[in-house]
Length: 252
Ligand code: 1GP
Image (tube, rainbow, N blue to C red; front, side):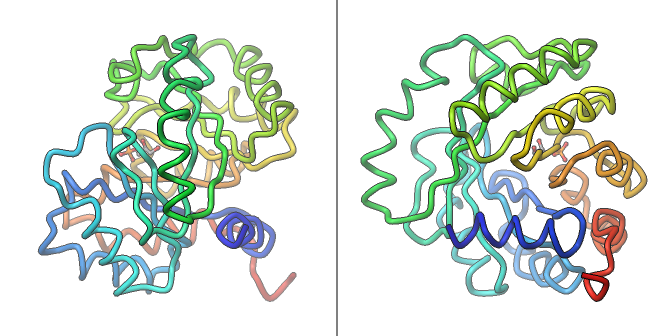
């Protein structure tokens, strides 16, 4: 429960939490050390590590880099059952609840569970909800499932509520990495309105302004990935963190 509690405490003290996605296929391994230090000093609250494909083989090494260079949690965001490691702090146990592909709802989980058990890492059960975003995202394609229509906030709310009733600990609204359009405000509001567990929003967030807008709608955790694959944007990490952390921790 340590990582999940860290997330809950961060939301309580800072208003919302800010996680950075590290895709070992996209972040150059040589530059990762300096990027991680940058993130830690800018106030990032943790890292998600994973990707829909894993071509580089740097998955394990990326987790070790996080552990060696920061005190922040390394949370696996698995694109497949190969992405399990005892070196991580936790894993988001993703069930693609927006789709009706049984394999991604429960099938892969049956295969992965004994491996996760052996790894000893914390498991955070997560309702992974793919939202239509203008392009066919890798996650939609790889999971062979339909995304939720972006103009149907009520379906998103009912889906999230069902997931919470099933015992899931996080609701992840995912527009997909590099999405043209992030998750719509109305949808975040509708989900945040009915759920008591934290709502994560990711995909296509490319400015601190948009990050804050999503938090204002009820997102409890913001994830960015793509934007920092360009080193010229690293100076903005602090601005993203400040935009997400709307509460002054001293006030609490
Ligand atoms: C993680 O998909 C996000 O949920 C990351 O999206 O790469 O577009 O920031 P970006």
